[in-house]
Image 1 (spheres, rainbow, N blue to C red):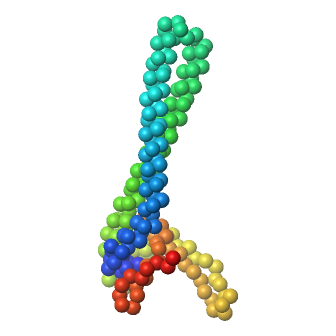
Image 2 (tube, rainbow, N blue to C red):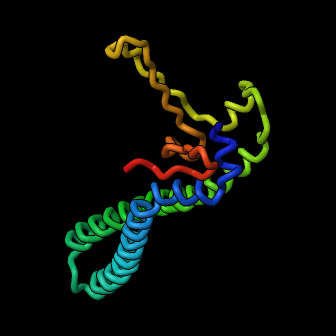
Image 3 (cartoon, rainbow, N blue to C red):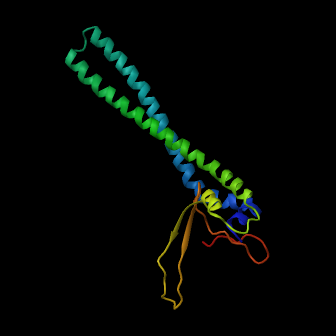
Length: 173
C-alpha cells in the first residue's frame, strides 16, 4: 500500500501518528516560546517606563549628562535586542503553529492522487521534499539499499503499514 493510499484510507490513523510524533515536543516548545514572548514584552514596557523616569531625572538635574547618556545607551540597546528577540520568537511560534495545518494540507494533496498507478515527476514534486539513498549493504549476501523519503511539509513519516486483515499496524516501539 502506498503512502497516498494509507493517508486517504486511514486518515484518522495517519493524523494520530503524525500528531503523536510531534505533539509533545511541539506543545512544550510553543508554551516555552509564549512564556519568553510575554517576558520580553514585559521587559520592553518596563524599559520604556525606566527611560521616562530617567529622562525626567535628567531634566530636573538629578542625573548628570554623562550618566544619562551611559544609562540611556544601555537601556536602548537592551530594548532593541529584546525587540529583535521578540520578532524571532513570534516568527518561530507562527512557523510551529503552521505545522499543525501542514498535516491537513498534506492529506488534501494525497486525496488528489488517489488511484494513481504511476507517480510522475509532477506528483513526486508535489508530495516529496527529498529522497535519501543509503549506500548498498552486501553484508547479508544480498544487495540491500535503504531509501528514506522526506515528505513536503511533514518530513520523515513514521512507519505506515497495513496488516493482512486491512487494519493499520501499530508502530514498532
